[in-house]
Length: 286
Image 1 (cartoon, rainbow, N blue to C red):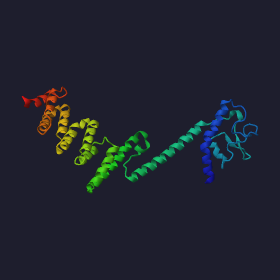
Image 2 (image 1 turned 180 degrees about the vertical axis):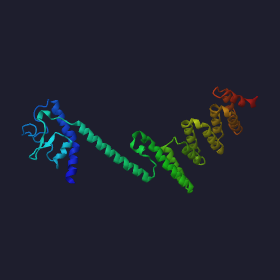
Image 3 (image 1 turned 180 degrees about the horizontal axis):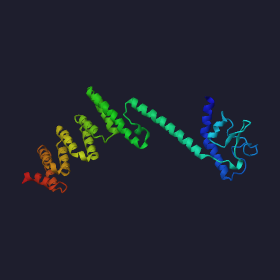
Image 4 (image 1 turned 90 degrees about the horizontal axis):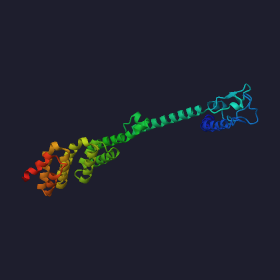
């Protein structure tokens, strides 16, 4: 076992070392004694000893690096070509290095796959072995924390559920359901965090803007934040002209409860607000 391991170690560096020296020998015109030949021999084929395989436990293994190595009928290991014909075999080097790296990579991938499944990550083989898919691993990690949050909430551990959801959101901010659940959890104790989450999701998911705005409105209303209600309604008048009546009522409600009614004049004068909405807002004043 020790001798086999030693030859494997020799092979790792010898593939590069001897092919490099042989390449230099060829570039110099293949004159003189090749780097792998015994310097005291003639350089003639089958009569020249191989210095490169000296020190190997089994010299025959050196043939994987240089197929020119042959065993003489007397049992000695010699070069099968004349000195001028000695050449490198980079194809073998790249083949062995490539195979070794591939096998090593697959072993590490298998270990990573098994380890992640043991922890609880529902990861696929593709997401482990295919580098472009590695960006999906954050989403896989987020899914694990989502499951943990559901389990903890079902067990009545609300604080722990929020912590798990927070980690899931950090790993995958684009996960709409997680962000909305987290915003609702923060609604009572941290309205600023809730606002940040709703604003972020509006930017990430503009197609869900209407649903987010309604949830946000409920949060603002629950805390009696009339100015924030007016600001949200003003933005939604431009984004949801079909719901102009609902958001106009929200604006009027806010102005009746402490918000400066001048905001209505600003909206009426704003060209970004659809004309029907401006007419609805301006109607009570006429």
